[in-house]
Amino acid sequence: MAASGLRLRAEKLFEMLAVLGRLSRCQSTSQAFAEVLRLPKQRLRKLLYPLQEVERYLAPDSRKDLHLRIFNPSPEDIARAESVFTATEHNRIDYVSSAVRIDHAPDLLRPEVCFIGRSNVGKSSLIKALFSLAPDVEVRISKTPGHTKKMNFFKVGKHFTVVDMPGYGYRAPEDFADMVETYLKERSNLKRTFLLVDSVVGIQKTDNIAIEMCEEFALPYVIVLTKIDKSSKGHLLKQVLEIQKFVNTKTQGCFPQLFAVSAVTFSGIHLLRCFIANITGNLYLTN
Ligand code: GDP
Image (cartoon, rainbow, N blue to C red; front, top):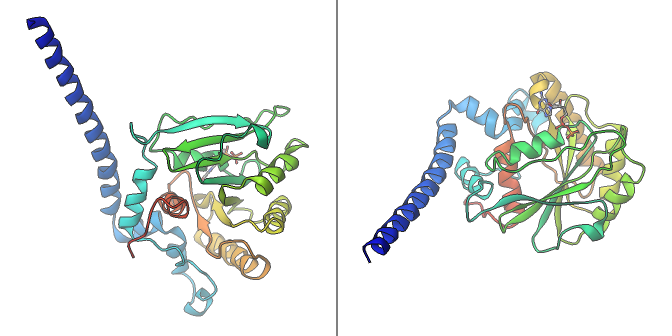
């Protein structure tokens, strides 16, 4: 009798410790973002809205064709999106499976977003950065020449699935185009395709092929400029203006607003998380 009472109390104690652990984990995440919000104004803007930060260097009349405020969440909305990307007991963020063929892809239970781009564009680094609040997620990288490249599926709680598509261009397997093309054409729960472009070199020939594919299938897609920490402000502005002009005049399905990220400084990562949470129906903006 006394032993069972003791066991019950011990169980209660373990339960309480687990709850405290979960609470402190939630708190430390929100505390981390609370610290971000305390950054000096200019550093905060650079981190949360990197393109609005460089836009300041343009004369007002050249700003009119940039569409940097179509998706313009408040820092508070961005903070709310962080919880969608935070792994907890109730929000499991995990690698699910890999597939070389669309019929091997997991079920279509949730909305899906996919990331495509040339090899070396910074795709794995970006996906790792997006999942930095889920440290157990392993973003698999298969870069060995000759190895079959696969589509990798990650689930973000019950919210949505993120798909890391094989990189195209240099050393891409011959059947790559078929795999990506079939996925893009047939995946009915695909909500948005994120097409990554290296901000240092801009749109390349192979990027154009991917853009044409998205246009041909009338997919909603978004251009994301990567590695923005590697470019000077002047170079980044030049690339942004060129790519924006291309989007404004030559595309139909591309979201008019460009996104820009650095997996090194984390600039633009929080905004991209917020955008993904929003377009998959997991975050309603308050403003
Ligand atoms: P992937 O082939 O598209 O998956 O590209 P990776 O993520 O493996 O990145 C290719 C190279 O670019 C690696 O050497 C990365 O360290 C580097 N890289 C990726 N993202 C960034 C970034 O935001 N800034 C900088 N400076 N380097 C990056």
